[in-house]
Amino acid sequence: METIKLKLKTPLWTGDIDTRSDIVRASGFMGSLRWWTEALMLGLEKTFVCDPVSDGRCPEKMEQQKKEIYFYCPGCLLFGATGWQRAFKIRLAGGKSVFNGPPINIVPRGRTNGWRLGSGLWGEIDLSVIPYKAYFDPVLIMLPLLVATRWGCLGARTQHGYGVTDIIGQAELKVEATAFFNQLTALKTMLPSGFKIREEANSFAMPNLKEMFFTKIRLSTGNNWWEEVDGIRERGKRDQNDYYRGWSEDLRMNNWIESGSVPIAPAVKNWLRYGGGKVLWEKGDQNFEQNVANWLFGSTKTLCPSCYGTVREDNRNARNYFCGYCRKSFPKEKSINKNAAKVNVSCAYPVNNGQWEFRIWGWLPPEDGRFEIKTMFLNELKASLEGRGKAPFPFGQLFGDKASKGGLSVWREFGSPRDTVSPDNKDYLNYLDSLSEGEEGC
Ligand SMILES: [Zn+2]
Ligand SMILES: [Zn+2]
Image 1 (cartoon, protein in one colour):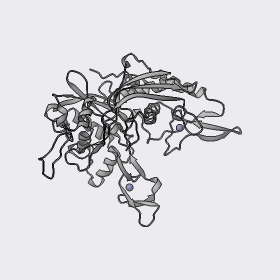
Image 2 (cartoon, rainbow, N blue to C red):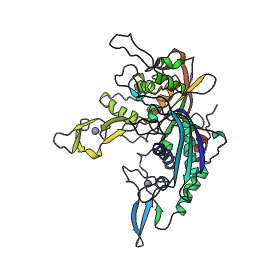
Image 3 (tube, helix red, strand yellow):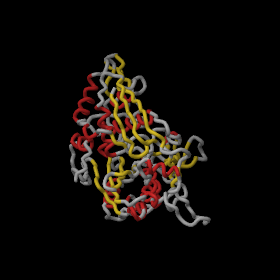
Image 4 (cartoon, rainbow, N blue to C red):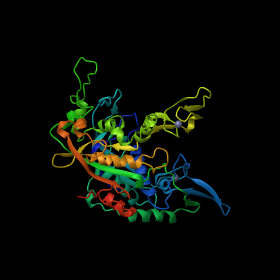
């Protein structure tokens, strides 16, 4: 058994959506670990990971030389599927509730509904890994863990800023990408008779590390700057209609701040999705704007699988929905429920010499003819964070006067000219090593 200590830099959410997360649940954490591990695997040549939506979950059964053979992808071999026990389990211990009581509803300027943020956990967590199978090598989850802690977030609700962690002692941890790749290759030779590795063409609907981007943004701040953040600060006058009392006096928010981070994601997401940041992804077709936003920033509504527009009941067929954009009726089971956000914004956390940092990161599938905004959006986002382009990032407007100076500190993206450490690097294993070591350039 191997135990890893995680320091929670922003609250960790391990529960399911809509439930309180004041106890550590291994299942929520395991889900994100699977997501990261599969994203790393999908970047490797000739590695197939099943997409439950388009490929069907493993196993695939086939008869070869009059014997039934079961085919599993490496994701299922590690994390389990029907007829195949997962290769390891994890145990989580530690962490404390950030606050007691119901979620805080943060409503940035211009919104009527806000972002509801529940407590989550802070402090330190012990993550123990218990192997079940001989072929399980911890490197298979250590490399994804390092990439996630250095660049992304763990647990659930990462789109709302939860889950930035540090592995304590990560500087001494060396996990090489070739070791990860070799273990994955070794899996194929270690399967019992009657079982084989499933190999097909991958679905573009699955998050692939090669299609992901990671950024870190730094802020220079003054004391108690968080009190001025949009959605946390008070707005208007008491007794007037548009008065918003803000959260700076609220004990729950004060507990959140004391736990070591500032929930800025609502302010940033509001600007990106509805405010001045819209020009970073808009293409000029206003009828379609809502659909692009549903696709990019996620939606809890029921959506059309072709255009990501919201659908209504089909009055001619109770089993169908009708999409007003496509002018088409389709079976309800084909619809998209709760489309996950492709862009995540973390809470801000302190780094050094009075500076704070936050992350914007995510996964966008390759341009597939649907919206064709990936290149444009990422170029514009980078320019914005560098204070250039169509809409320079408005630090002061979103975070207040005490945090009005900031900018992009690093951008990582595989094989991309936007990567600020090793632009256009098309050596995947080399890129993985650079990510896991936390290389940020100078
Ligand atoms: Zn599978
Ligand atoms: Zn449609």
